[in-house]
Amino acid sequence: MSRNEYWAKPKIVREQALMFAPTLDDVISEDHEVRLLDEVLRGFDWSEWEAHYDGWRGQPPIHPRVLASIWLYALMRRKRSSRPVEYACGHNVDFMWLAEGLVPDHSTLADFFSKFRQELKSLFKKVGRFAMTMGLIRLGEIAFDGTRSKASNSRYRTLTAATIEERLPQLEEQIERLLSEVAAAEAAAAEADSAPVTKLPGELADRTARRDKLKQALAIAKTLDETRRASGVEVAKNPAQVPMTDLDSRVMPNKEGGYAPNYTPTCLTDGHRGFILDAAVLNLVNEHSEALPAVDRVTEECDETPDNFLADGGMATGPILDGLETREITAYIPAKSSEPAVDSPVLRDDLTQPVAEELWPKLPKNPQGQLDKSCFVYVAARNEYVCPNGRVLSYESRETRNGVVLNRYVCESCAGCPLAALCLLPRRVPPGSADDSAGDGAAIHDVIATGARVRSLRRDEHEEVRQRTAARMATESGRALFDRRSAIAETPFGYLKGFLNLRQFLHRGLEKVDHEWRWGCLSLNMKKLVRALARWRAMCREALMSELAEADLSRLPA
Image: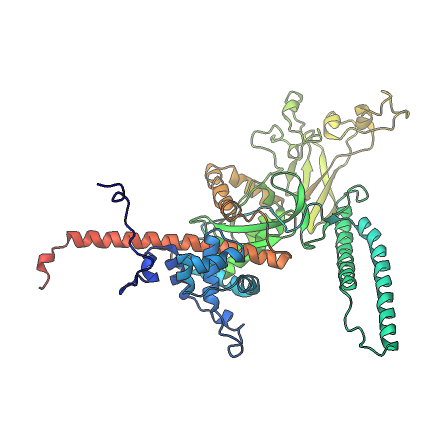
């Protein structure tokens, strides 16, 4: 055999005309995911999308189903930008098959991607319901979590309120100077009887737009500073920074360290096959405020209440736990109870008797070094606490913080209590004062024991539901169910940020960023859906072939 005969011969000669040429449909296999994607999307109603088109003027537009199919398939193929998608529609056979030979340009693709926000949410719901009818979504366990993705804004393009206030007067002076030049030009044109100035010069228009943007950024910066000041932050030393390219983003900690303008995308994921049930983007550091609204949206869309809710310890707030219990959803969240442990020495038969002195080292302490709240036993019948020494902390007052009601309990007197040095925080005295026996302003415990200071505790309105959640998490079944949280909640982020590279958004503005995140989440759901369809069709084909092989074909009529 000669060397030239070794190589495979071309099946199609490029220059030769064929009587029966292979069709584009022949190139795509029956189980190819682009074929299954097209089949699923053709089954949905697209009248909402079609209503945005005039239907009479201009060139015939590409149907929105085709453009939506192209974008979803492009995201499944790791293409996020419109120009690579345009190229694929003209050169890749799978894209050519899906677009049926149409090649939309990159501007058409980009406009379509950003336009249909409400319609995309509706399509997201339809895909979820379709998956639910197939048994791919069961709502047995749902997991909520958030991540961090960078905004389309440089880390160094941020300004504080003080910097903006310095730049605004300079910009106003430049605008006034340019306006005077325009007025002089108009006057000269009037004297010469020539055409007047009909539009602002580009330099003036740019500065006017920049001034308006600075004013908007200044209002945002002042609002953020007030919020930080209310939280106890010294704004003079640590002022808020406003990203100037994307004003809706916020400077937040990066997942990999440091700070940058970021957003906080969230996902509520079903535990059966990992379908994303709800997706949203926040410009807040914590995603806690989105947990209950996400659950409510899923309950409304699916007409069914989820059974179990999984989340990390940051979600163990009283309002979330109480809200889930009100909705009859079991929460599996690591909640910390302030109740004494089962083996705690403070759980004695007679609470009026003090804890034995030899058991004092076993009393838990908080991070500040004083006796922890779990050392005090709450007596619900009398609405009071009892300390380890048998003294009563009676109800004194009620206050509201961040919408949560707190009851305050105060001991009648801590004077002479042998546990006062452990129970009360050490008093700091001014250096050189009469009480400063050490000469360095250190704490003096005997002053505490004889002084008028007393121990106080606060109990919020959600304490009981927090205790029930902590008791549930202490069981073996509760821990086993919670162990599934990371696999359910964090897998979508691994796909969206790792495979799809949604570590940084391409669009700017909270609404557009939220829309971009939803496109990515929908592409993940479609990928899971078409793969499930491919598996089921393969199983049905194998079962049918097996039955045919076992059947007695000789008894069939000729």
